[in-house]
Length: 122
Ligand code: HEC
Image (tube, rainbow, N blue to C red; front, side, top):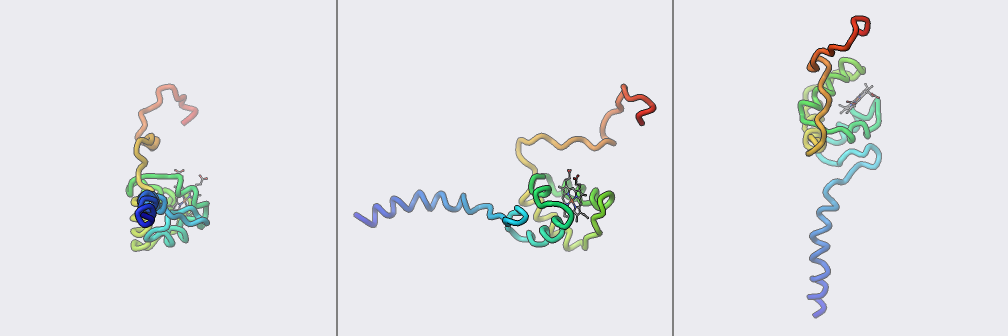
């Protein structure tokens, strides 16, 4: 019957569409559109492209470390705790650690001493 044929055609579509719709992104910044994204866009694309944000991934701690680093060295202004929380929640949720990706490089103070380094280099 016709309705049965239509159902048979629609079922696979119903399975495919939710997957495709999972990550709607803002064409401007590339950020995933989800709770808090506008705060992230207005704060985190002021100095550099959103791509610098979206191509990175990490835990909440990692993102907080990056924000502190930008505040200490790159002129990022102090963020009100509420704003920072919104940003960290968003980043940890949508740009969390990539599975199977290489770990980030160790910070210099965690590296072993380089025995080949000459005194003049340091
Ligand atoms: C005051 C300017 C400024 C603002 C605002 C800013 N950043 Fe940055 N950010 C920088 C600069 C400068 C760099 C270094 C760019 C480079 O290395 O080319 C950087 C680099 C980065 C990197 C790359 C770090 C790495 O390890 O290579 C990430 C990720 C990042 N920013 C995320 C953010 C996020 C998230 C926000 C919002 C909370 C933000 N930025 C807001 C200035 C800013």
